[in-house]
Length: 85
Image (cartoon, rainbow, N blue to C red):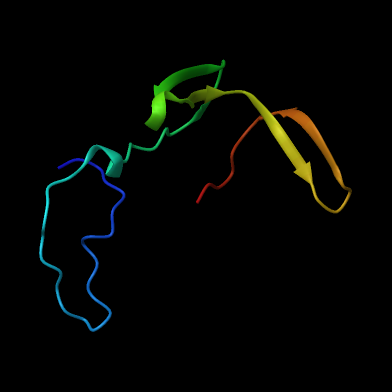
């Protein structure tokens, strides 16, 4: 089974099952999570729909941090992740 982003598995509004009317399509493709770790920067490029590129961060050691109450954004080094949900 591949990873898809489709709504065919959902039930109808009335609660009934939906009949399968076609196989999976390329545009319904989903990809596994990047599971980014802390470390030296490692980024892979992924071809997306229309030939566009997405950048999959496999390892990062810095990023933008936005402090809403102080209305400022800074590039900071990530030291540790306490909880990620």
